Image (tube, rainbow, N blue to C red; front, side):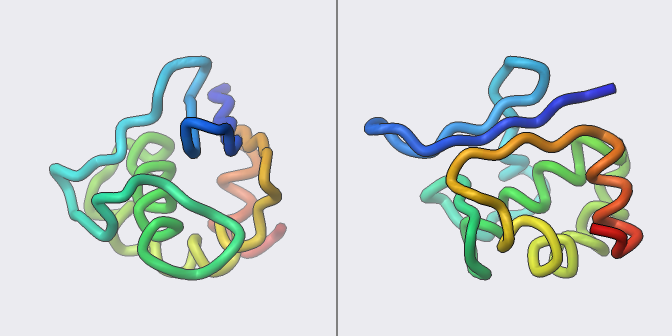
Length: 97
């Protein structure tokens, strides 16, 4: 099981997967060069949604297909500091959060 964690600090927003920095996946699509954001709908949250799904699903095309709805349903509703597991991401994809 993977654990994704995010928080805001003086140096900016930080997101990890199992303690290591999460790849923003700019190689897949650039929504925001400013990095990850959450708690609202927009470019930064969209980039986070894509990165989370690409890492979790291991399928770039599926990540692209679902990132908009996942951003609306899950990422826009995260608190300033948050923790998601593989199971909660699956639940979010199925609209069960």
